[in-house]
Image 1 (spheres, rainbow, N blue to C red):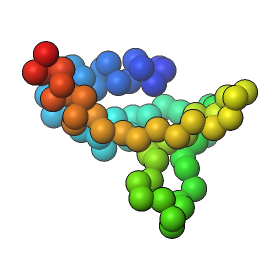
Image 2: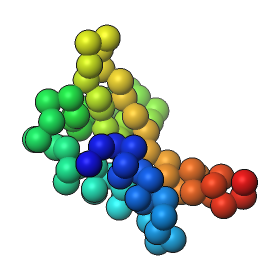
Image 3: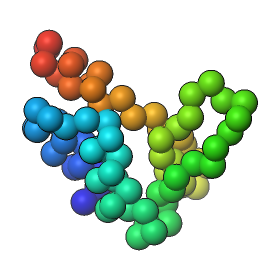
Amino acid sequence: MGILSILEEECMFPKASDKTFLAKLFENHMGKSASFGKPKPNKNAKYEPHFEVYHYAGTVRYYCYLSQLLLCRILS
């Protein structure tokens, strides 16, 4: 199951949270996909990314704020 499929599934459930989304991501991709990883902690960063996607152009760090996404979906 891909990242966007997991996100779509989480958006259907009223009790979904950032933590449940991340748990499903790590369950489905960590150690199974070479393109997915957990970022290394950085003491100088103001905000820590929640997961990383590796591809030919480099590493892209993502921050998970599903609660805000769900709120936007409810209001629209």
